[in-house]
Length: 131
Image (cartoon, rainbow, N blue to C red; front, side, top):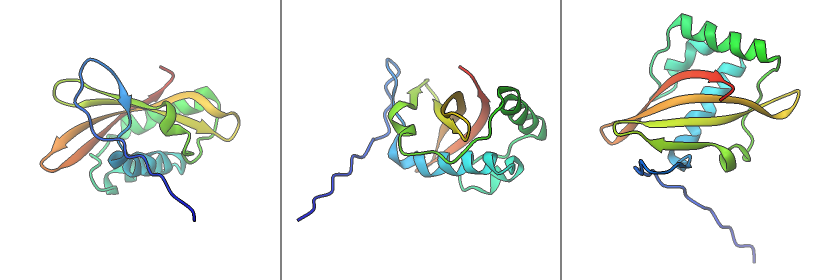
């Protein structure tokens, strides 16, 4: 008999230390990275819960990835072992470790702020950069 063990990472408002990315946010964060990797940054607002992003911010994101010299790929499950967030008294600051075709785990990270929005969450894409 096979047993499956699913670990749920809860949302935490601990302003003293970082925590792993909550399981509830991972689908949206994956969709954000997929959209950017496909060159469809302008379509981020079509993802439920994601705030519209300015064209200038999209250009900045693409320039940072281009300057780094890689092509982003879908997030593997390993992303969630190293990516982190922290409560900042009003929002969570999130860093998602990114992967590329050329090197697998890269030094690039996606920076997102996550806000409470009633019973749900609102995601503000801020940057991709090397922290």
